[in-house]
Image 1 (cartoon, rainbow, N blue to C red):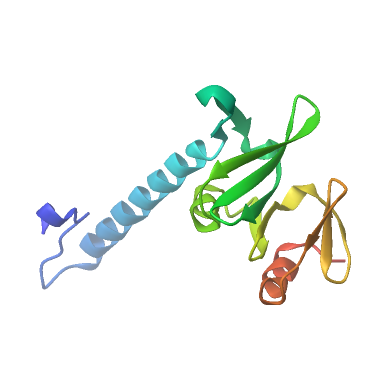
Image 2: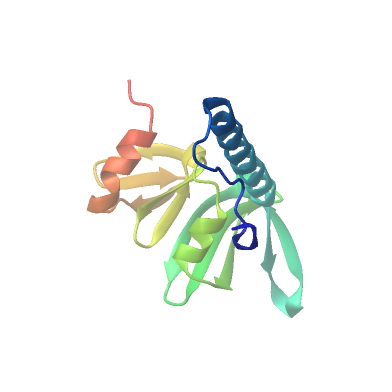
Length: 148
């Protein structure tokens, strides 16, 4: 069992305190994994011209747009809006971003929730950029926004 990266091993008949110890170990391991992932999401490195890598803070990303086999990251860098085109899929990018901060609102768009300035019927406004809202993503968006 330990060769399979098992966290704990309970033998029958097990006692309640022993069961709690196993659960606490699993919760602790899960929390460590979440904290490690959160640190990775603070900064992203994007390849720019001449093979250089530019560090972009996740908090500076406005939205991400799909473009065939590429994605366009729209971010604020040095107080100006910049676009970075990288070879990746939306699914791959979405898995690297914090689900607390980012949400897919269309099959071609992921937005940073705190950058949304206006919401119309089928579009979002993110820093003067209109982004469509997909029908299948609308309920997730409504659940994540704080309506009064």
